[in-house]
Image 1 (cartoon, helix red, strand yellow):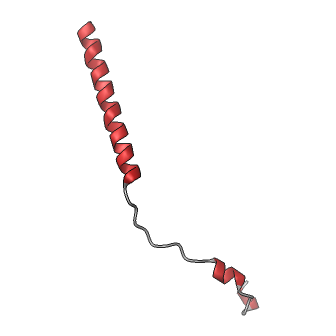
Image 2: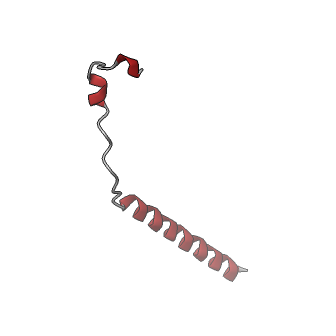
Image 3: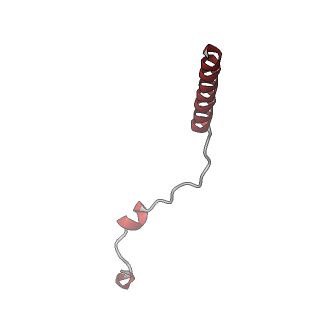
Length: 53
C-alpha cells in the first residue's frame, strides 16, 4: 500500500512539474502580431462627411 502511495505522489508531482513548465514556456513566448491601428486619429478629426453616421 505504501508503494502505491509513493508512486501516486511521484506521478502527481511529475504532472505538476510538467504543467508549470508548459505554463511558464507559454508566458515567455514572444507573440508577434500586427500593430493595433491608431483609431484616435479618426476620432480627433472633425466630420468631413456628415452623412457617414
